[in-house]
Image (tube, rainbow, N blue to C red; front, side):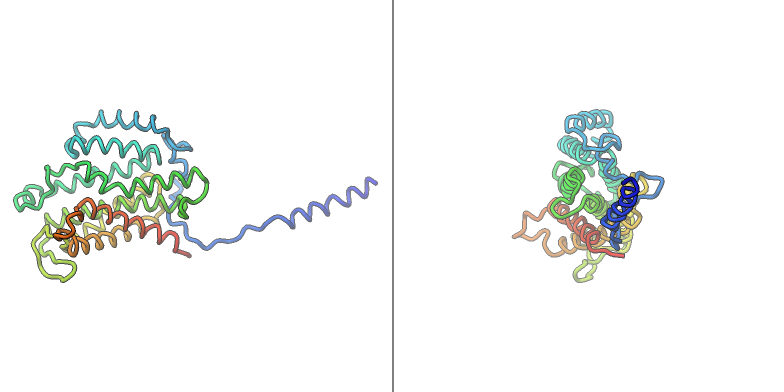
Length: 307
């Protein structure tokens, strides 16, 4: 009997091995979450207070942001109006609660770089009447026009990672790439606009290529176009090498998406903005559409790209 038992055991183990499913090779290119080896490979870990797993409690996020905003209030109030300061605090709280400090820091970088480039040649732009109002300080409407898409993407990513599945048919990696791309789009737009107004030698209306004055809605210049590409690449590179949210391929996707979305923004400016029947098409609405296009393009590329 003991011999019979020993003979049956290998047969069962062979049957078990035969029933095990073989891993299926995939040809899909991961564009969002393959950071360099020196960075964290667990992007889900960014959904914690300091790279720990899980989302951050809203109260903890609010308290932490309140401390940071209070400590940096003098610097921030040079870039924001009081209303903009309050709304930025709310935005920062939402982003940290949804995605942790790494997601939050990408938006903070956008704010400071956007403010810095706005000050380039400011006196000359102000003299020409094409400088940003309020000395370049952002109000509440600017905050949400620029970052509403990013907030929605961060919330989508949080839902996806917490569920361990896609959310609204979009996986967490794609939501993160959309988040980065939306802010890269806005920074690209700010770089292109401000550098073009400061240094653009020849500006043309994007729809007709007719020469127009600097600062005209829908106008483009060589200097501004180059700055657009640079601005998007800077933010995308930080998201990859600085905090490990996206891969090197993701830098290319975010930069290209940002550039194309900014061209769409110029088309909207040339054809729709400022029309008497479209008073609602304000700069903030155009900014929202701009960032939405940038995020949507990146997510679409992520979903449709194969090796």
